[in-house]
Length: 441
Image 1 (cartoon, rainbow, N blue to C red):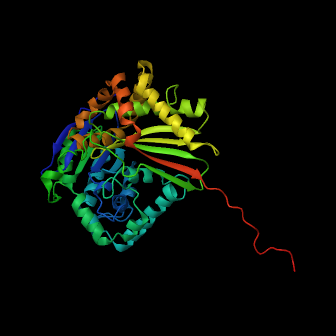
Image 2 (image 1 turned 30 degrees about the horizontal axis):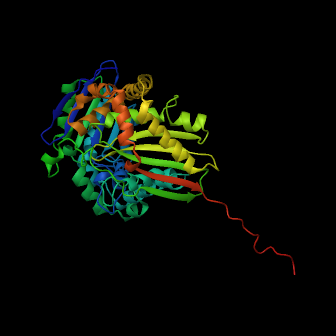
């Protein structure tokens, strides 16, 4: 795994630039990370950050709608974007000689997106986002499960209570004035981090960043906004979910047991141990939910566990168990709790823990094995901790956690009091009589 050894520089307008030179990679991977996500949306406007991810491709001062993507592809590259709770990131990978084109394109929409924003582009992209929501959440079995669990985990009004997908009602209510205000507040150089990875010179990248971004003014509260993200809830604070349990009867293939556990924020004490505990639970080995529920007890088709890391709020541990029709949910829940109790007891052996470490190591190497993954991770570490070089230390901080700490995390952090539970039960088909087809009179 290459040592990233990033060079960091901050422009006078607050834009942070991070460069990791790698002459063995004949491309430039660019990530422009805005510190804005669904947690920054005004009340009653959920989904606005994700909507803006789409609007950012609808033209700017010198680029027509669709022109950004077309220019990247014409240069032999590709581009993409993603919105989360705490960030919106735009990624491009191009031949190293076309780096300046990407920086010009990104600067044009940072400084001039509002020049091209119209009621028509807003209406078109709103329809696209609403259709995405229908395809990914509303019209698929169990599709709103995670959305419900997140809302159950945090109290009303909490900034992390709504998924980036947003609600249809809020999305339909978004106005052009909402968009202009949101853009002016968040899509500014002092709310952004630019990282470049590949066969590039740090000095040249910094010069190009100054040339293309240096004239864009920052937003008002500059000093507060450039500080690293910090948690809003202490990792050891009481974490009673807003709603502990919900049961849903829907047209789904079979029963399901889902849970979300409130865990320490990313980078805080206990987070790495919780990550390893969930990796042990969610693995396919002889230690975990799959072995217990799918292989041995045959109570489920699938049994998974994962971690959603958050920096400004408690992270969420996720359990998702889907069972065949006719399975008793009480049996599933008892088996889940028994497996967690086993892990919290003597279940974290050094042999089992080494398997979990190997999986985390493999996932990290996969992420940083591609220049785009490195560029994204450099932005993340810079945004969360003000230290892009933390990329070179992150893996060791997780792998150094011992079996005793992981067992303690399973006992204290995966306890029933820290979770919200959502269960699904298939709706029974109601027998229908053939109305209107009686015997002839």
